[in-house]
Image (cartoon, rainbow, N blue to C red; front, side):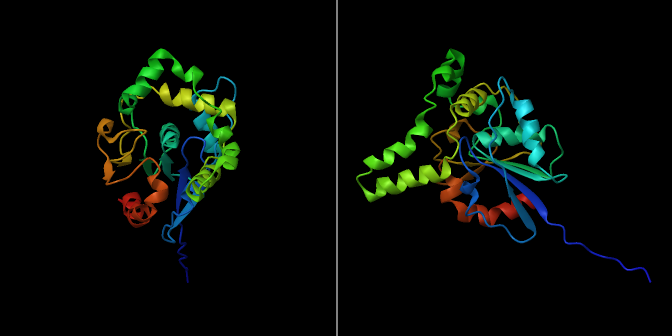
Length: 224
């Protein structure tokens, strides 16, 4: 008698953090057992590397066919470039942009003036030094959070990432993309964003502070 075996295959969900951030920003993300979460980590870019080649190198860490890709902020741009190379089950960006036209005016001006070449890339590297000046518990806690979540302090990476974000030239949104955005995002203001799922009171770090919303809604968003 021929037996039929049913395998419970989990849906692979790859998550890409924001610029300079560690995958720990997804630490409070808790999806049902039918999903398997795979955090991606930033790689140091090669000299003169463009986004296409970088996306190809990131795909070396993706070990499933037709995965779900989720990217936050600049990580959202990276997963869009990855989705141009492979087939995906679902492409989701959070606190990010779908085209260069959704960048705020100050960023477009910085691009036109080439100001990314003088960006303060040592800011992240200096955070650890600030801790000795933390005179209040609240400030000390905030610095501790920055130390925890902003883990990439390589100046070459930071210069590269800022330039790639400001000079991203995508003119049309990818088909089927799901964009989740907060209406209180100061980095990518909501007024510049089109066709998104809006989270009331959501800031640029809502993946951390609005984790309950994501835990409740991401499963349905992924599967629909």
